[in-house]
Image (cartoon, rainbow, N blue to C red; front, top):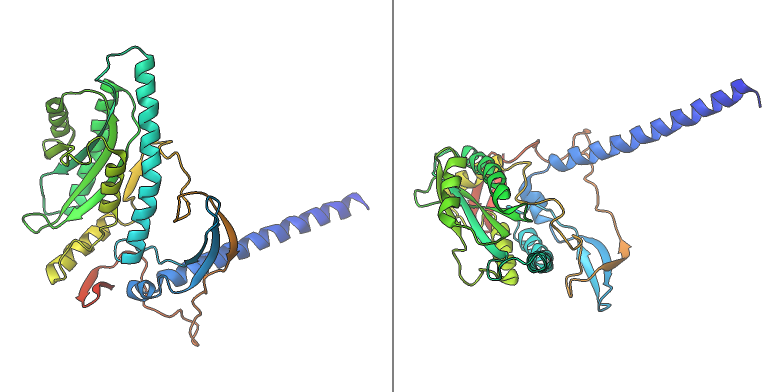
Length: 322
């Protein structure tokens, strides 16, 4: 083989590889566009109706049938409860592991017993401004500033943060965040003053462990955090005002995390068996059926490339519409 022939074959192989990658990428974007073109109420109606996989628990050997999920956790009861249950099963051993490590390090350092890190729950709130997106961003920025101040005083700590949205006493929407973090002895009054400063005077309350049953208990804290993230829009009444509030919250949190944590926080994998929280083995998997285009070449469903701009209250709950 001559040198020119070798170069031609290499270029042909490279061209084939690029062509295959482009075709694969095109199929991905085509499938994603088809999914975004479907209404939320249609996707939610198909949730948990089509077989996805068969898994076997490595701990007890029980076989489970798993169905495809819509993953619209803010509007689908099934997905919200499933996500809350998975999060709780991961949080319990993770929080317990961090607490054991921090207390061991505290005692090994010869520091005063009784002041060792204690699992604490904080609720971050700001004064209502009637702008849900602005309130959420103010809490987010305030938490980053407050965390920097807290780390300077007690050192970096593992934490997990979840968002909750309620109508509030004035009915104009009340976004707030719940944080679980192990802290040593610290003056709460100074923390509240710093939260007020971190939010530029908008900080309303920095509440520490309001629920005594959850204070210091990893299992109870995990249950409360899982409850908050699985509420979605189900805490709102099914009326026109609640629909507008829910839609404003979805728009403000679109593309943003409802649960965030410190780096390296999770000590267990995200996928655990539903029976005994052990690892599972995949026995059978089936891809979800792809939405086929109509005869005129257009995909079925209305165009929707972002969050719904309105929702309607019906007998079965809140239904999203354009």
